Length: 251
Length: 251
DNA sequence: AAGTGGTCTAGACCACCGA
DNA sequence: CGGTGGTCTAGACCACTTG
Image 1: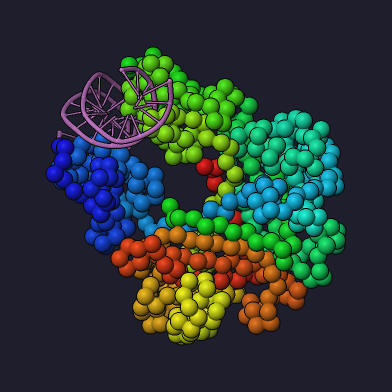
Image 2: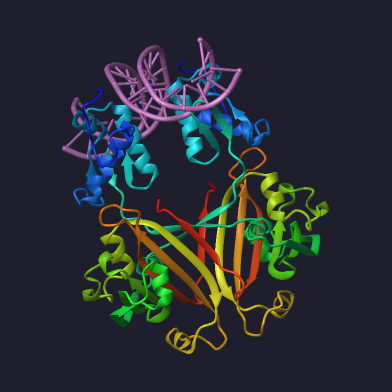
């Protein structure tokens, strides 16, 4: 129908599907619908709220996309279990991040060559040991002071011209992002102790720990296949000079 | 129309709106549509692909929700600029996380009291120093071995019964999640060195670093106001026994 | 005025699930 | 079999932007 209706806890001028969403969320918030409980079906919402089925469908579909509901064709719609809290840690290009702080970024290229992958690196790429990969090691500085060691392996097919690039001017992250669309990313963060060379390069005090961020990125295969590991990178920061942060609204 | 069509790089059996999405994404991937470029309007897609406008709308709307397009009513649809890469670090309840690994969780309550906030804590809550808050310190163990120190401050209004809970049976995270819906979360991860008491509690080797995760969570105000800081928690892990990881598809 | 996205409807067909 | 979600259509009205 057209008007004369109000559904949930959303402003009157709001679109109908949003009011339907608010209506369902309000019942969940009130404890009326607990996790696992069955939510009114599309047809029931049509009858209950006087909206069309497409509108009810959009409301429920979006709530499912937001993680609030689970739906199964032929069965029904249910309140999703309380979800673990996740965080978006936004990991910017180091050069852009420094620029945003008003600092000056520079980089030393410590190593840049094609090398056979050892067993550990090869495993990260799902390739066999000995496969030739590009390997770069960079030292990034903020206002001249060492901030990050970037130790990266790259699948040659993902960036054929990798060895010819000037990494004092463009970061590998930037180049790879521009070259191939990233399909998936994996991150692992850990605390550790630096080896002697790392401590020396980063000009760290004795005993100071490092923060290590390991990142794997996947790209689409050339023909749009499942996707391949394009790059494996370790970012190492002095523990006293770097923190990783993120703020977000729960999904 | 009904059938005899195929649009982009998606399987023939796939829903039409997904084929429309694939069609647009393929043009972006091919460099045909670069960031900022205008994407065919809904009407144009209707004419070009023979789908209904609702189907074209759903395809473009979902691509916008996925961050690939920007849309402006009255203007048009455009390819979104390349986005900085973000990561979802999913941070589970420690008890559930241990259970998922097949371990046994236990906890010691080291401290549980109402205390005036010092200047630093109060600042985190946007309150004035000296405000009375609940303060708990817990030591979480996996199969008896210390894994995490949880040092938490809680706004009394967010969990009035906090001091009466049995934290050997339910974790503060779990209780707070069940009590009040979280509106926003902030995380900071850093590496550091433990003080003597921390090293002792976590049974750490000399010189071993810690991984510290600091979390602030916001809840809605009682009347649905802007939101208040409900809790401020530090989670401290032995660097040698914990890593924080996440895998996701770029938005 | 023409084009854009934003929304909504009433109906339709389908695959799937459970009794 | 009836109920469920999943999809698709052909129209419609609206607010907005642009020329």
